[in-house]
Length: 484
Image (cartoon, rainbow, N blue to C red):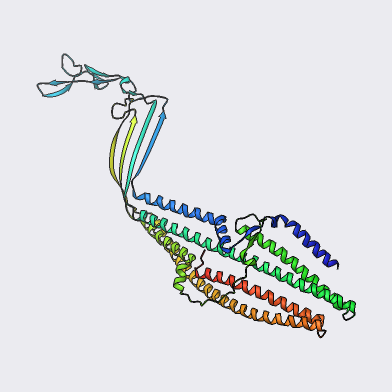
């Protein structure tokens, strides 16, 4: 019996290691809906999807602002080491006097008193009188310069770019919402899968315990029969080996159940060492009933978020064609500015602030870009075609997925009904074997075979029932009708 002691020692170690795990077990059984709500609340990927929805909403609001005038302010301060002087030195300007005889102004020049001709110096007449312009009069203090500009720009026609950007932002927000809904359904599906996995292992543990109890009872009976001389040592060893194998299976189920509970806790966003009882562990489960299946693929496409996501993506690429086309169209905008400076450029560069308003129209007409904009349009058209093909391909795969899910659901119900009938026969067979063994007409081998068949029938019924639950969830996911 060394194997038995090792198995039970292993089970004791597992129980000790999971003591804290079971000590925090919840008192109130947790329903499937509660697990779903916890998973949706605590899942990090879903929170990321929510933030993407918020970001897409802000982008949409940002795109809407392009319809309204933009107001900008630009200010500059600059310190200059030197002042500016427009003259190199003092300037002397010749003067004129009005001649009554000729009715014209004549330069005042030095003339020869004999001939009356102007006296020349280096070929130039010598002014008789001059006007002095001192150099200091044209020096400006620009040590501290302040310049400011307020600009108002109102788009009038941008080639359809603003509308295309707004449409793209709107579709991007819907795409983010659709992707979030897809993530929600995927989380629900994972939760259901983990939930029913735990339920399956719980009932298989009960089954393993029942089977171990049957073998233990049989082992005691065989030992009594050996002592009475109506059974052989070989019969006892055969039963003991089966009992050891059942105990090993029970230990494996215990370990698998512990790991499955950890996986479910992680999905629900709870500490992995927290154990909670599930409703379907102890309650008598309602027998699965096959529902008549009727579906319309157009309704399925409307319910599937993957199709909605690809539809929005296709619309986005269609709008990108309009965006590329806008680069080839004229653009018109109204511009208004108010500029000011210190020194005052309107009053002799006096150290004071002053400014002026300006209003104008800005027109941009693309003429030649060597095919750059045209090729952008062609690239956008190719992307739109790819998006449409991806949408069509997704619809084909979804139709196949729905048909496969419907077939699997129907097959699961049929398998479940067969498993129920097989279990009824296995129960009757085991009862007859036990009666025959007690009456001495059947051997331990016959009883062990009957018990093995009963165990397989029970296990198949559990698997078939859990499979019907999972097929229902998978079918609802494929049809896009999953409720959560």
